[in-house]
Length: 180
Image (cartoon, rainbow, N blue to C red; front, side, top):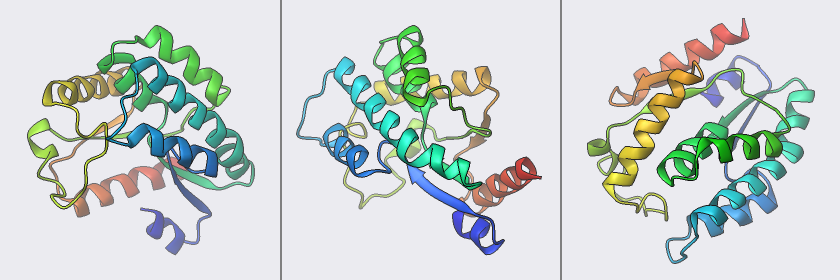
């Protein structure tokens, strides 16, 4: 995706959450460390702290400079994981997301829907982080949350069982249409 946009000579920034800045990457290490127990509430505040830093230090300056920002995960992830799957509620995550982003919203959100049965077959050599080690019931809650949130927010929901090449082409076409 990013390479295709750069090849088209479009100004693009690729980033991720949690992460994207030195402080946010340090928070990411804590959040994803499988050796640590992080309570749901602490987890939520760590994600929001990372997001606030990332938004102020990376996202807003890139957008102000006219860049296309491709960000892996954003506020919908917090709603799905902490709001729904961890049971903290969207009434809690919503205001915290708005505070951390100061109201910044994506122009296009793409959710790649992968069934739980396909989760572990994706990259078998990959070391699983703390969240990826959660049980299948938790993953099912997350998936169901993403599907509901995608409908609520009018996000693009794509079948993640399709080939990577097909998904890439579909997402790229949607991004280019959005930019037109």
